[in-house]
Image 1: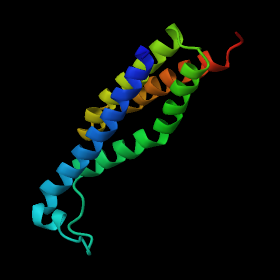
Image 2: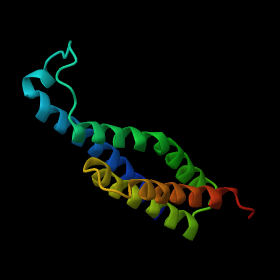
Image 3: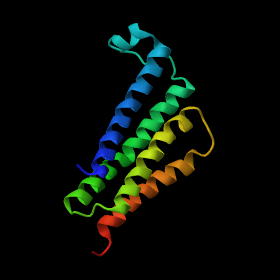
Length: 131
């Protein structure tokens, strides 16, 4: 398995972690009984950190299908190389840093998002550049 596919696997682990973080934060706000129940009502309003974690999760899901497709296409087309390795690493690294920055409201989040998107662009460039 290529390092790029391993990075893709870890990106999927990050997606699961983000689901769990948002769920844990929401359970902390509503209590286990509410969360384990049918949740017919909306429950109490979402707190700041929980809402940020949910938005960070949604933000990941906007680009994750593109990243998955790009890494798989690069692998199937035998275009794996330094560009896809750097791009994949930059995407995953940016997405990891993005979660606490967004969750805690640390300035600089847009720059991290741009860095991860640049990583995705590197993988795409490796696919689309002339051979």
